[in-house]
Image (tube, rainbow, N blue to C red):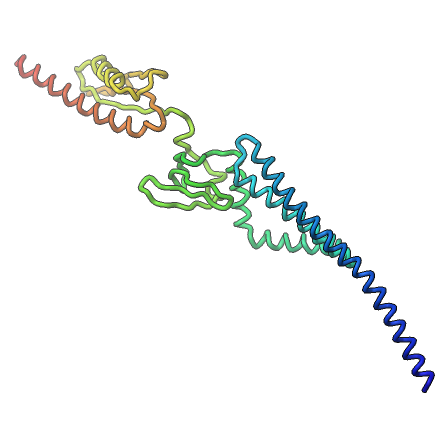
Amino acid sequence: MEQQTTDIIVASQAALRQASALMVQYSFSIVGALVLLIIGWIAATLLQRWSFEGLSRIRGFDETLARFFSGVVRYVVLILVLVMVLGQFGVQTASILAALGAAGLAVGLALQGTLQNIAAGIMLLVLRPFRVGEYIETSAVSGTIVEIGLFATELKTSDGLYRLAPNSTLWNVPITNYSRFPSRRHELSITVPKGESTAAAQELLTDLARSDSRVLLDPAPTTFVDSVSNDSATVTLRYWARSENWFATTRDMTKALKAAFDDREARIASENAQTA
């Protein structure tokens, strides 16, 4: 009986010593883990701030991209810190990294469409085929750019409607940007009946272009005989206008041409009547 009591006491003392050793060991591990977490959190915050400020200083670098990449830096640092903390407790970090890689692959496959939009958004923000305020047209969408995001681009259509286009629909397709260059060309044509002077029609079109101050002098407006048939000839005016005034200028020029052409026809008819 006494021997059993002694064995129990000895076993209890051994268990207490082992427990004390484990507590001391894991106390240091816990303290080390807390220190790593605090330092890692501070480092991640500072690196995010520095990377954002550094990218923002790059001329032409979009703020959305700067925030995205600085956020990626932060989360990469936090993941590395978490792996190091788990390593403090004897967890095999190699298996954790393998699991994270497998999880990342699974998430990537599940969010393939979303990641495609993000990749397209990054390319659009880097290459800048269009900017906010510019009017674009593709085979799928057209409108004025309101905002360019990582996932989608917001547009306002010419009839005042809101349109949200996934970035993947705007990438790898031909894009016509009507606002990128400072000036645009326009053409006006009139038909001159057989027997009437094409030179007079060219003079009329030239005077019309010179009468509008929005028509650019460089490149200078030009007129030419575009085509000839048995019954008539087509005379064309080619001129340039500022992109922001292009639409209004073309509408006003077309209206002025109609008025000038009607006046010319009325004058010719009057002269013919007097001759008769």
